[in-house]
Image (cartoon, one colour):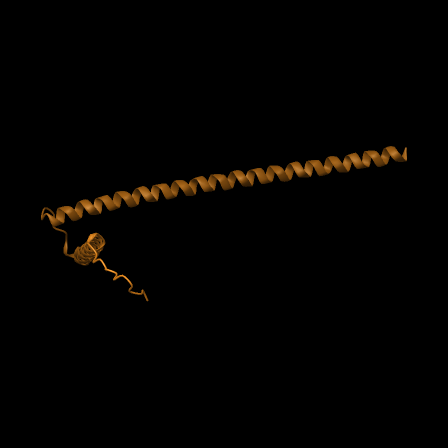
Length: 133
């Protein structure tokens, strides 16, 4: 009988450990689901922010084009922002000119090298009996 009581005690402990493991697994599953929901919500927030930024950029560009064409005049409070946009545009244009100049210089160098490569080279005439040094 002692063996039966020991065996039933072991079975009882195994069942308790199994139930505890099941409870822990349920807690972990719930935590994973909660984190998955949070990750999805965060990803959705990022997508929505990106869409908003794109829409604002397009709006700003449309307004700027209208201001440049003289079809829209902004209130005086926008003066600093307009100056910043103008300065940024000038910087972009200056940079584009620098790049164009660099590319043109590179083309000129390449053309000179090509011409030098294709130019006839003078022939050296070796006199019979002359020693090379």
